[in-house]
Image 1 (cartoon, rainbow, N blue to C red):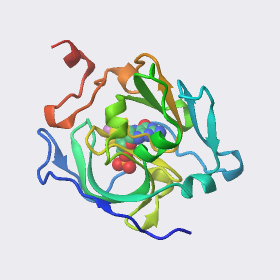
Image 2 (cartoon, rainbow, N blue to C red):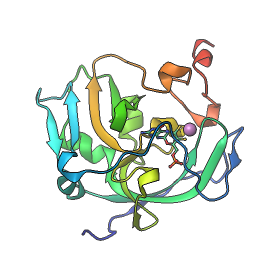
Image 3 (spheres, rainbow, N blue to C red):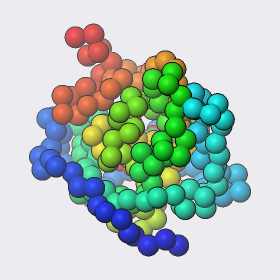
Image 4 (cartoon, rainbow, N blue to C red):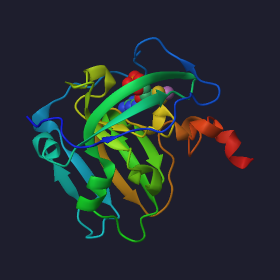
Length: 203
Ligand SMILES: Nc1nc2c(c(=O)[nH]1)N[C@H]1C(S)=C(S)[C@@H](COP(=O)(O)O)O[C@H]1N2
Ligand SMILES: [Mo]
């Protein structure tokens, strides 16, 4: 087991994004059932337009041997509630990008989870120094409901951009919409400008 070492990447903002209300505690919110973690059937993969053309795959033990960082973050659900003051610990996305660099033609990223849930991201959003693949919350392993064993956290975007039960990162040579983006949610999802709905993309 590794220690909780490394610097903390603090967030700068103290206020809530417009149109958000704070929730009590940390309610669970997602679509579908909670998957069971089966270590022998589990891998984290990076595939698509990688610089080497290779596909990468790690066991969970291998993932926990990667560099780690702690961040503090608020989570903003596009339906209007926020949960505040989380402390996440895990592997910074920029460390994964260094391990498995994308090819020059990679212009977008898809983060894939169990059961085919997906969220598309711009490379800069994935590469943000506060985007992490979290294994722990508040010093404890994530609970199953909140994404154990691995969950993407993208604090500067609405919650649907952060798949729980993360299983793969795909480097794409064009943009493709993920699960909620196909169902009427905004492709970018900046909470500070209230990019909630796909119809706003035209204006
Ligand atoms: N795999 C998966 N991840 C998901 C979702 C989902 O439906 N499936 N919902 C997203 C949405 S819309 C939100 S707001 C957050 C909620 O996370 P929480 O329950 O830990 O607060 O999870 C995100 N990650
Ligand atoms: Mo959400």
